[in-house]
Length: 423
Image 1 (cartoon, rainbow, N blue to C red):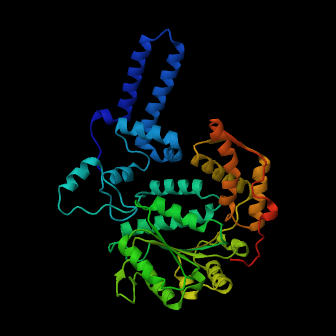
Image 2 (cartoon, helix red, strand yellow; image 1 turned 45 degrees about the vertical axis):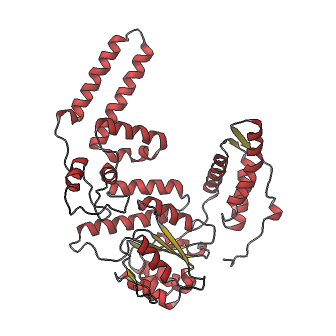
Image 3 (cartoon, rainbow, N blue to C red; image 1 turned 135 degrees about the vertical axis):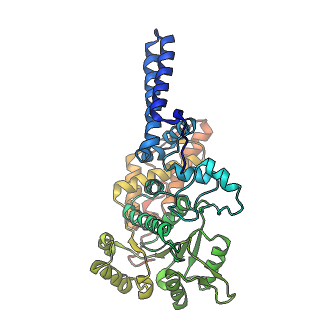
């Protein structure tokens, strides 16, 4: 990556320039001591941000992920000409000239202009993250959105980053195997599909994803081939992976080795190189939560795979082709309360009102319902009922904020109980 050599781009020169400018302004406003303090602080923040953007951009990743603070950092970066945290990727995406493999370095705007003049311009990358800093930022954003499954997110993102970095170094481009094949285990309503959707949104520029259910009775492979032909870079989600037919299992095992995905009826072949395949098993993972700490090949990994095969009915060949198996269990009560509060706030925003307060008893009741069902499957509909009446009253009265009290809009006696083996 080339950088401007102008002395004005040097952070020390910029810092001195801003100090001189601040001194000049303050000399004109010596009688305004509050303004003196405010301007000094603002200029110091501005100069410090420029310095961090130039030399320690990774320090700003968490701040950049915040909505308003991130906007300020991005504005300072635009004014000073410095890249935003993970800015190589940001510049390459905005100029449509990123590398064709995730994890590869981007180019600057001047390089992009030169590249566009060439007839052999490489296609833009379908991946959002382009550097280790980008993957760190993606992981941070995912953990903010997908609560309670931090361990699974850590392992999945680390696996994707490692694959990307190895591809960038490999002489043959790293082969045609998918970016990763991961198994997500957990009861319905635990967040498996939501995790897949948010991963697709943060990993791919188009945020693509396709869901196929192995219990639908139809061909599992054909819709996957059609989806990959339409968009080669996306997350492929296969539900009820423990009930995949033998032919589909054989195809996935071959794909894990780099073979194309084949539609036997039409003869169409597609490469899954730029896809992530997530296999979902809708069974409780409480008894398997102890295997979540196993992360390396060895005796522990063998035991993990043996239990997946024996207890979940996953084909042994497919189990050994996985890049990771992740048991997802219900988060702790405090995390559940945060998730429910977030859903309530999002539901209120649909009607243009904000939440001023949520009574503790309301959250405690909803957490108890989730724990009784061992699932968040009914939570969105219950939240909609909770918010409906207060939101309607606020709109009728012309108010902008509502308070969620203890009125139970979905009585507990009407909440169905779930059998332990219900799927």
